[in-house]
Every structure is written in structure tokens, then in C-alpha cells.
Length: 345
Image 1: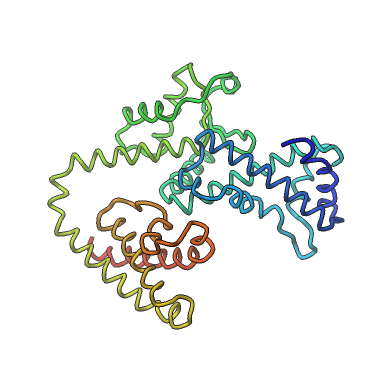
Image 2: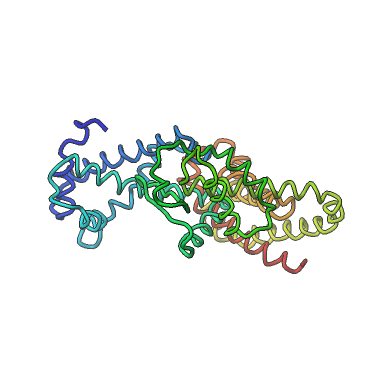
């Protein structure tokens, strides 16, 4: 960020921290934080470290979403997160360069948290693996985490190794090695250990890796191994056609029942038109069939499923007008489908 663009930021931030701010202090601090967040997102995008579906969003709008929590106020109109964060600031809040550097760390952490929150929305498989990896990392002493400008890195080598100047190991290379060494039946903990054995047994690349990158590789690995296993069991799959037909009948009935049950809440009360409501359930039917009938997983984001039935919708329109209602209906329909499908097992 050019020095002139952040000039005076120490003054504005100090007033937010002291709760003596005016509207100009807030506006200038929001502007600088937003600029920092956009820069971080663009850097991640340029390095290929963002999920492809995130790139469909307006990065500027995402940046505002991610930093929004920083500017929440309590009952006394105090910017509580600024007060808490800058309580750890060493020295007085007077020098623009020092404050900007500290502010960038705060914003980077918010961006990282926002990215993972967005992953949960657009990629449930990634989110599930991420949650379980975090549990493993918190439980075991074999793995260590390090924060670098808001991005979490993981390592299991000697600490002296992580500071060596080396390029990051290409994900294609480590993914290929991992697929060759695991069968897909290992626990996540075992697979994670194999990941770091591969990383630690070489000397060309860094022995520290971004958490998001690790999860992405583990997901790709499991998907590849799952398809390989399905191919090997093709004859078994054919024998299951009768069972698959039963699953489809159950899923179709669940959708019909839920569409009838929820109609009074959404159509009768004027929250959705009859056509939009029908489009929602057509999309939900597609999604749940992919999950339980065809067993493909969710073939795209929730937005992708709805967009097939609402051709004029864009991502921003989905987020503003449809996401909350549609994703709630998906959630309760999934729960009902799982409950009914248990009767077949």
C-alpha cells in the first residue's frame, strides 16, 4: 500500500481504540483495512491459493465481508475488537508504519477465517476434512502450526528446517506421491503422517506447508482413490441397481412431502412465489439425488444447483436474495432424507 494511502492511520486507529472516534476515523480505518484485505486476496489468487469458486466472487465485496467483524460495536458503541487487539500492541499508537504492519496482521487473520468460512459454504467435503485436520493438530504433538501473515502453516520437522529458503513443494507432486503410498482406508491421522513423511524426506522444497493446501491435497487424494475403488467394484455396483431404485423412490417421496409441508411457510406467507418455490425444490431434488442416488457427492456449490433452475441469477443475487432460505431448505431436506434412508439399511 502506498505510504500516502495510509497516512494518518495511527491517529484514526488510536481514536477507535480510545472510543473517541468520529465518522471520519471509522471511514478511514475501514478504507485502509479493506485495501489490505483486497491486497491479501489478490495475492492468494495470483498464487493459486484460493478455491476456484471463491474466484467467482467479487474480491472487493468479499474483503468487506471478511473485515466486517472488526467493526462491530458493543452497547457502548466501542469497537471492542480494536481495543482487544491493540491491547497487545507494543508502544504508543502513534507511528503509521508500525500501526499499518500490526493492522495488516489483524486483517490477514480475518481474511483467513473468512476464507475458511466460505469454504464451508461452497465445499462441504473440504470443510469436513479441515475440521478433522484441525482436531488432529490440536491433539498431537507431532505437528506444529505457524502463522505467517494470517495464513496457517503446518510442519513436523525440526524447527531449524522451516526457515531454510526453498520453494514450496508443488501440490501436484506431493499429491501424486501420496496417492501412491496410501490406499484410502487409512485414518486421516495416518494419511497426514504420510503426507509429512513425503515432505520431510526430500530436500528440494520447504518442509512446511499451508493448512489450506494440505486439506486440498487430502481431499483430491481421497476423491481419486474413491473413484479407483468404484471402478474396481463395477460388477458389485451393477448388483446394487435394485437398491439404487429404492433409494430414488425414497428421495423423491421425501422431496414431495417436504415441498408440501413447507409451502405454507414460504408461499402462503408471501416469502416466495409459487414458481420460485418450485424451482427451489427442483434444485434440492437434483442435489439430494447426486448425494444419495448417484452417490456423486454434491456436484458443485449450492449456487450451481439453484442456477440451473434460475438462469438469470448471478452469485451476488444468490447471496443477497436466496442463500439463507435455499440452504435452510436443503439442510432440512437432507436431514429428512437421511432419516428415511436408514429404513433401507
